[in-house]
Image 1 (cartoon, rainbow, N blue to C red):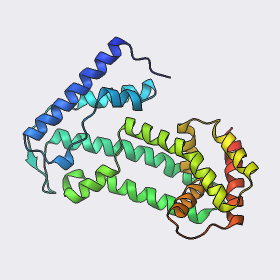
Image 2 (image 1 turned 180 degrees about the vertical axis):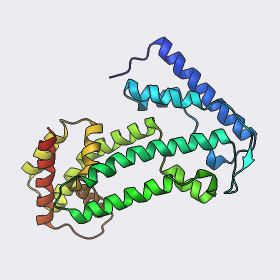
Image 3 (image 1 turned 90 degrees about the vertical axis):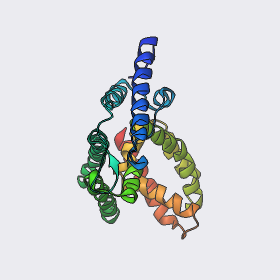
Image 4 (image 1 turned 60 degrees about the horizontal axis):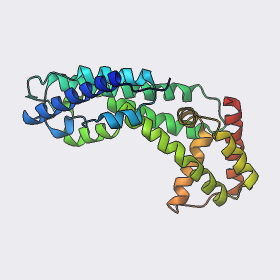
Length: 248
């Protein structure tokens, strides 16, 4: 459900953001390691990035739970932090693990003509989940920085999804042109994609090897790594059309 930000909701959001950022400043003043701290947030970023009330409620709850500065101690990994901060960051990781696991389960149950590609995707997801499942207290700075790269806030994830969706057509036309696809085939896929929301496209993309193949092919071509076989491109295009029609 779309969000209408009335004066009361805006005030609630501003209060949560102010408290969250104030706690980060308190932790900085207490000498907490910068790599452990989450990014500061703004009401504007959250309003731009979060598109439904369910996610907004989750985000407000998360911000409001991040309140007490706590006692600063050195972790097993040699970083200065507090119990509250470690619990909060581990909670972020657990949220991302649950999201990754949904994609992982879908891939395991997917019937496909691309078993090798599915195997690579599930291995990558499994590696991510295993990394984020580690005790953050044992991580050093280098490991925490890797941890941070795998953590996106709800608003960052929404904006990332939208950027992916907005770039999807460019990937499609580029791949089609380089792979020798007929314009009618490219147009058919393009018209089907427009019937889906960014969230739906990301869901299809994360569990469909043909869509992933198209994007990976685009990236290879963009970086001038190898050539694209026309027959392979045609097969992938047909698989994309089939997947989109099935979802519709």
